[in-house]
Length: 255
Image (cartoon, rainbow, N blue to C red; front, side, top):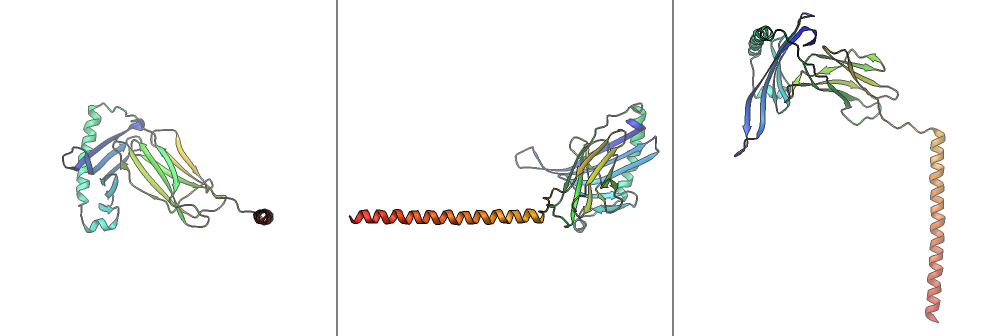
């Protein structure tokens, strides 16, 4: 892999509930884990999580040796010893060393990400909202996400998920930025994946109609009033004509 980084990725399907009389998988719980090392920068990274049908159940904070549940209520019905994840990482590290020697430190192909940005709720000026930067279909799971507001880097309030595995062995990741929409402000999400010189960016700004000026409001009101008056006049003329036609028909009927 570029930059001297080698990645060991282990995906283990633990549970597959099948439909009666069918072989098609319905629900799946997946244990996903990886250990990787950047030899050039002398950095290590690893991850351990459980996933149900594409949604995280929990991951293990390997630095704190702590199980972090995606929703706190999950811990009421299940438990997981975080120490077990550390043991898996030690095994993965050994396997990585063997793989690197066996394959002569061959480099892997980097898959660039697809980046999408969107607000959580319908945008209304001055109403708090959340911008989501969705990074998808990339490999390896080594990248950084930077938020910019009006061209300036945002340093606080950003929340990120862990790396989520996909069926094709690539990854996806979410980054969230709470914000208050204001006219004239804009945001950018920049993604840099290790080993590629290109930065992947998405731009976003509130799409809200401009307020009407006083002169425009006056013109609109005047046009509305004129249309209303014309409607009344036309309606009155039509009513008078209809009454005359009805009177003429009645007179002919008497004769």
